[in-house]
Image (cartoon, rainbow, N blue to C red; front, top):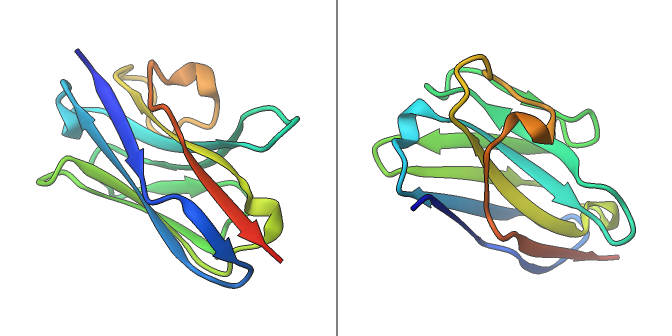
Length: 126
């Protein structure tokens, strides 16, 4: 059974940094393209970042580019999202997602992913 577990969320101040982790189980991690999405209250889920199977390529939403960094350690079966210079508008539930679909390399759309975590809340106070 595939399970994705996010961790690292919490309450932070504007300007702070935070690192989220995603630890999948039940899948061959290195064969999955991975991504981060977020959903703020009253808004639709939106793309944050994606990383290729090898970790050699990544993509970001324009709202986080230059502040967030996605990475993965295939030996540890873990993906990370390093968030710097956090803003109140980054407040959301953050979800990690995994895609087994071979045509997905850096997926920006949620329907490109077939496994999802339960999410971790990040709240940024001003």
